Image 1 (cartoon, rainbow, N blue to C red):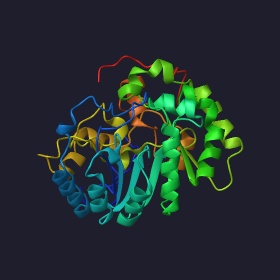
Image 2 (image 1 turned 90 degrees about the horizontal axis):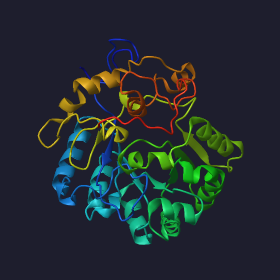
Image 3 (image 1 turned 180 degrees about the horizontal axis):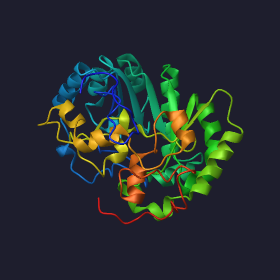
Length: 346
């Protein structure tokens, strides 16, 4: 396909909107000093030695930039657990707008100054609860909330913009308003509430962590009722449930193209150590998902997000079909109990 916009997303037999990706997520590593109950990367499950080395990541970044990528989002695991993380971040930031997702527990003033100096545009910090007892239990490491807040403080002292992220689940559902106040007080200008995805350890702990859709919407409603001044709220439930596949690209720690970090357990579009980047972008399943043909959609979400059907990862996890509607949208849920995850082979 030629570069630029093409086709009609959502139409049966339609073609993807864009001929090449503009933004990419690098899942840089599956290493992490924490032991999170909801870890999507299942950190520690594979040897760190199997991950891409520095030279390969730098080569891939050069390829991405040459192929028109303008935005790189770096996550893990914990990206800063790699000794070469700052080298890779600086290489990316010199070529593309680069952001970082981290637990922030190892960020001090010196690290924050280096991140600012290399051009990191924004840092996203995961907080799993407003109370230390909640957060520390969720990440399996005492003292982690205090360390993360110290990391945020260091970033803000060096004028690095900070967003706080939280994965909404049963242990923290009642703490969202307090977490919003904590984030604002720490100097963050955005709070992103993320859904629980059926990946890695979160999949194995689903029955203990998952909420019904009614419980999720109630928690979001409580948050939206009285947000702190100056704090943006971001969420991906109705009416903002987007089908992001049309624009998403991602690479896992071992160099495989996975389309989206939330598809990491479900797809493999090719090994980028041996397959050209744009060849994986045109994998038949990838093209199908990017075309956006979905069996049913929410008109409210389609209107606000300019895509239809919602998240493909949760749609597939609950329905076993790539063209199924996303059950995390109140319009498309159709009575599905999100606390009960179907036992499907990965």
